[in-house]
Amino acid sequence: MFKNFPFLFLIAPIYAINVLVLSPAFGGSHMNFMAHLADTLTEAGHNVQDEIMSKETLIVDDHMDAMWTLDTHEPNFEEMFSWFHRIMELSCANFLRNTEVFDLMKTRNFDVAILEPLSVCGLGFFKKLGIEKTILASSCSLYDFLLPDIGEPEEHTLSSQSGDQMTLSERYKNYRFSKETKKTMDKMFDKETEIYQKYLGADIPDWRELLPAASLFFTNSNPYLDFPRPVIQKTIPIGGISVNMDKIKSTKLDSDWNEILDQRPLNMLISFGSMVKSSQMPLEWRENLIKVIASQPDVTFIWKYETNDTAFAGHLENVVFSKWVPQTALLNDARLTAFLTHGGLGSTNELAHCGKPAVMVPIFGDQVRNANMLSRHHGAIFVWKNDLGDFDILKNAVHSILYDEKYKRNARHLADILENQPHQPKDLVVKHTEFGPFPKMDPHGRSLHFIARNFIDVYAAVIISYFLLGSVSYVVLRFLFSKIPVKLVRKVKKNL
Image: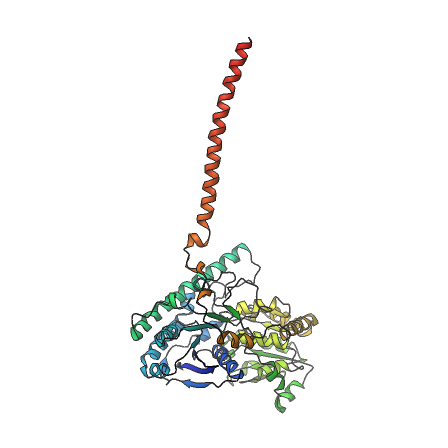
């Protein structure tokens, strides 16, 4: 498969501060998030100039269809992301090889640089440009593999399979997933370090030094939606920044979509995002989904489907296939009853803000975590992707989300909370980008070795102290008691 994989530059002058936003053109949700950061700076009254470096075609294999059947319970992380690592390494080398880009960026005298830490290639680039203040920005709720490097406590892993209430075995899996992800990403970052040192100079520091030097860490997390977890002060939650409710509410559906929504009393949208295609879903799962659709004749199902090959649906009248859907406009429409989604964070945030109940069917990556995150608010139902082939499980989930009013009430309640939250993400982005840098916000604790960080030396000192105190007390008491019987015996003999 051929993929164009350029880096996107978004340049924004902010109150005499020049900001560079660097984003690999990978994944619609990732690019969308970074673009909204730049748009937010523009909306603050400043201009953004978009520049895309010259594209060079990279030939890579398309592995996304395999995500449908990939085991999300026991994944092989190295195998799962080998294709991603290959793309990022090729893109890093291709990007840095173009010296004209560096020369152009050097003339802009940037004060602040922002990038998503799915790649550390840009950190080396920023260092070579001499940019003092850097900001990390995660399009996901968090990247748990980064937490040890920035000094943040590890609490809840990105790909948790079980939510925040886990059994012993689930906690073990949670721990192992986190460590495997960390090992896999460190390996890729080490390779990227070799690449940027090759093209930019061996004096450019290792990523382990550049990453924690970032002044801030924007995360696509909302404290009223996400799992509660401990964070450090330079982690700024800006979840929902890509959801513009004013724009969504002002968008009107055209006559074709209005006609579709008016056909039946209930309507349900089905979409699995842009990276994993519905048309690549195993045929037996698609056929089972059609059976579930057929069992709900009073519901119109709008299925985002990428091809015209829909023969598996027969002549079913209550399903509409479309290669594109106005997702946010549909979610905001009162006639749409529910959403069956893969649980990408973009869709999850849109769902939460629009107040629509949903059936969450995560496919890979952070989608399992997102599904658990939203379902804990009781406005969504979690269904494992393998259960797409189970008629009873899928039918019960779809029927419940359509007809049980509690899901609608809970989804609406969450939307009201998000609408009235005291701190708006756009304000946080603008104010923190303008303020800083913050070198003193790098926690010293992250540089402690394992023993000191986990207080093992303190525990050992306390245990040894108690042991010594106990030993000394034992010796003293034994000595004292050894003297008492002798005196008693001598006294008794004297009386006789």
